[in-house]
Image (cartoon, one colour):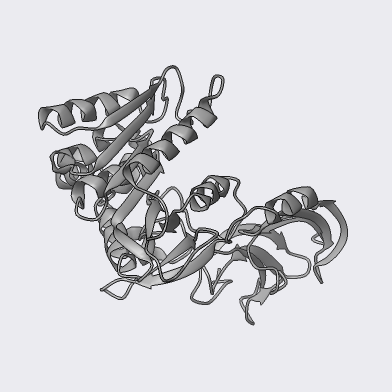
Length: 374
């Protein structure tokens, strides 16, 4: 038994083993954790990893390799390119036939009056660099100051900063069209290939380390000349809803308006298979469960807060909303709330739910976070 892959990078996914030719194929991204490429290494551990994906095709790539390792179904996209699916010859990555090019979608997307998403890195005071993206308004003027809306998630289950196609970005492009800077930053502990230390940094600290990272990144971004520090919004769903609450409650001097969807207000309420994996059992981490739960800090609310929850949420149960509401009332903190009856975690069931949800969110931001450059 010996190590097959060597280097300062993560193997994200094992794709195929070609025992006859002596190679293992896998997904990795040594240079940029926002992207995914196909590599291969020799099974004997000799030589350097070989990138199979063409360098010019930036973005996310996935492969379904044939049993004989001669061909593959290749899917790739990036933030500006809808998914392309093709059959390729594996040895030279030569396309044989295109199965789906999403040409019409690409054409319609290119006709939108938008500025394409820009990626950046921001360095924290301890030297850690966080990946982020930004969408500017179509008529962006660097001499003006604009309101910013941060989209957050921040939990170890996922990531918001990836160079892939996502239809969810259309919501953010819509906000930018109406005069907002829209940004997102991946804090430490998110599900990106940046090594063991990155992943382990939030063990027993969900909601704590992540919100500190988000707040420090926001403070630095608010120093940019075109960002208005008096008009700062934040929104997220599920773990991002909890992150929104933690940021609003723990750092009220930064965030002025927040919208939290389908959230957990008390970590003791969430599924043990997830929470205990990252937080240990409550008896062994009483401090972490308490300090990482938004409800602990609800009395600090100063800004505008919209709470949105489905009464039939099967993941982050409605009880979580009720407990937070009672805590806010107890401390005489004022907020706005929308219940979607009999909707589950995604808030998509029943007629017109998605349009009503997004319209409500947009109107709340517009009312409490005036749009446009000044």
